[in-house]
Image (tube, rainbow, N blue to C red; front, side):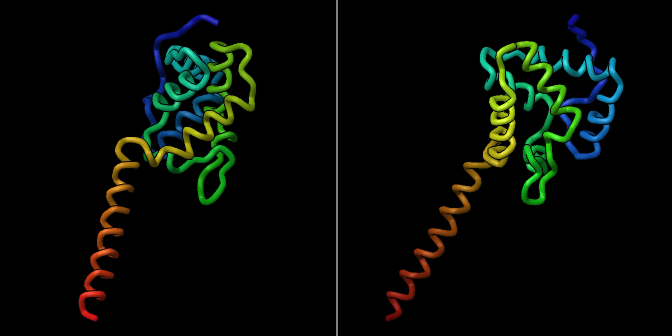
Length: 146
């Protein structure tokens, strides 16, 4: 497949509305092929790296939080989208032995760990430390009052 450098889509998608436009654009064969080409060009030396680079190119952290692979718990099912199919094609062009299971598992993990990216893990740890400190301080104060 020839690589096409022009990208008809505004990436990464920041909102569900922007994602819906990209997903609907994949119904047009030439736009779908352009998206596959853009995703292929993200690179990656191994399947995991390729999928991570593709997902980072496609979706912001905030949008990733609205998806899970299968749509569990109040999230949208990413595997039901046209964009998901474009990722499969792009990854398979780079790694022809890639299995559905390996690609799905890598995408699922990327989506599931979205809240840890861009300082999310440190922010959660800080909140936990503050709550833990407040609880410890409260317990210490109660013990001193006794």
